[in-house]
Length: 433
Image (cartoon, rainbow, N blue to C red; front, side, top):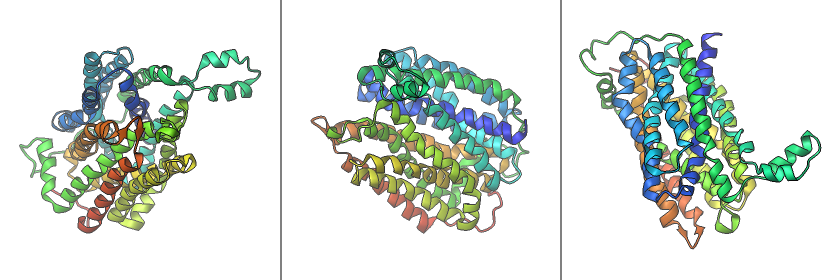
């Protein structure tokens, strides 16, 4: 197995884990009877872990002689924790297990990026292809639940003849109501098994020993050196814009599953429960195609325009949500913009950070931006979005989705304008100190 193939599989498993439980957790937590505050605390575990990981796990990975073993240990313990979430319905143990998982999982996103970049000769061309594995992993995590959320009792009662008839009957009989919500526990079990698989696979990843320390960073921790990058105005501007785009990105995950599953008479799209994750995974399919052309796009458009287009993809998607909520076809089709949203902004940010940061703080520099992408931005979204959805824009059982979606639409538009006006990276690409 080649180095690129191993890195690709690493990304498949890494994002399979996250993609298995994230899309449906927003509807699952209320079904357990958790209050809005308890839901926010659980959802905040992921961004809090990103903040904590900036100071500990990424530092460990940068200074460790074997970041692959850090990855293996993190997924071993974190996998057992998320597995446990599928077997509890009480708030205290659920929250504790989710916190343990997130504290160990979130930093591995930076660590897998750093392992990948350490084993690439040309990140601009190669990272999109390797990171495409993560997109495929997310898609693979979504489609099995099409069958987990099937009302098998109804299928058995239908006495189908032949595979095609059986398949059609299965897809036409989704679980509904409390049964569908209860089945969501399998998302955590599947995620846990995938995490344990990655723990084992990490042991055969290519070695990526830490880089020699830079003179400017002698005697300083890796995370302190990473924060020092913010004294460069172009990095600071990108870091702040990343915060806004992260909020918008996480608003999508907070609200889209609920929006798709809510009945039309209540303001939603009315998609069956077993089709929600497949519909959301359409964006990951187009993300594969976007990743394939990312290198060529960066070469042709440059950093700024590529990232502005990525942010505007969010604005366009929420505009369709707000203006055409009754058109299921348009709502489903607009999921294809996710590839542009993710690859042209977030994946480009990771490549940019690798190009402009010292190699001996690779994981911590990635963690600096994951602090915004997975940390502060997600924390803001997970704290504000449940409140906006349940308390501000919902009345009498009907949600004003148009007003709700105007919030991220405005935020994405302002972020794109800010990046276009104030982001001016140097033409040359030496690592900044």
